Image 1 (cartoon, rainbow, N blue to C red):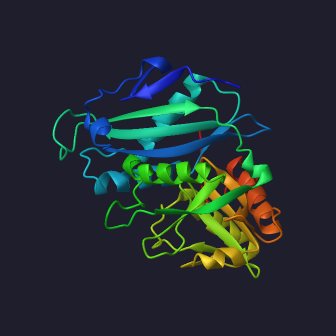
Image 2 (cartoon, rainbow, N blue to C red):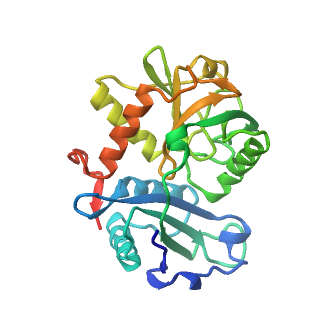
Length: 303
């Protein structure tokens, strides 16, 4: 497996081990930072790399920087050139995961809005083992952050303290992962992925007001399902008890891709096996991101 040798920091390529951020910067002391996880997939036939939904990831980053009052804006074309150069510099021979981190470099008061720095790292990322086996989830006692406290639709690093606590509890309790509920007790999402379930032949997901991240992968699933199944995913509130009536379930996210869920709170989802709808979504997703089907939406950006 290839290994990263070069990292991008503030428009400069440098040896991977030499990247640095001052420990007293606001990005460190107050978690004044946002990030995006992107993937560049290698087409198995042509060997060409293409970044999946670059524009949508950068637009979400721009929105987060606006909410957090950062005094710099990154443009899509600027990031296309920078990230493409980063990928080429590392000479990968397989899929690439990109972590783009934007932060306040200043040393000082909490309310400062700049200067803004960024780091982008390209690395290999193996297909999660749960993609083939399915995973067990437990409903966490930790609630998902409320929009009026620390908005989850903003991909701020600080929000992931909530996710980390949830994941640590799940591991301690013997689960592979967790599901979080909103403060009002409705299903929200997993710590690092959005949640879908199949019930009575209908694909259902918590709506955008359920304190979830405005996920690019979630939107991809919504679009692919509607186009291929000829019906829309149902977006609505989901009660905790309804989880136990699901016939299938899966998680989705850039890092996790499409992960089947086979049990929740130690109760089997459906018959405890990976279901046909989940398998279909997996197939559609991987054909799309690898460019094995026509790019009808302009989602693939050549490196």
